[in-house]
Length: 192
Image (cartoon, rainbow, N blue to C red):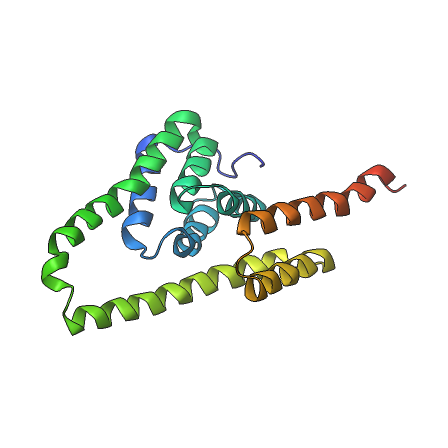
């Protein structure tokens, strides 16, 4: 990744506040946070470039663990090294931790109510829309050449028709295919 586009690294309190806010206002996990993070990190604060964001999303989705925490670790580290990674990850974990505590304490009382079930159905629909938005925005930026389009289509078909195939295997195979596709370009050297 390149150096941050902003002139100086943010203070730890700013990192904490940004990640806390993102975590507190997004529902549905790491994928739904991506459009909010993109707006915050690319457009508003200019901490990342568009290419940095695409690379970070690709890395966090292929790593084990929670996407939001992985993204906080990578971005926090990039902005303020180990203290930044720690503060960002902590900020991202606090809102869902307390939300889960509150929901767990009230769950028995609200679990059978039709209005609560209807609210959760609506939330799930909105989460699907956010995930689709993330996929479309990343796809528009990434799928500009034939090779990424072919890899995306192949991975999509594997996931649709062979759902038992492990996603990590598909990601690893895509990485190997990208490496082999890039290898001939590198051996040719620069064009005169």
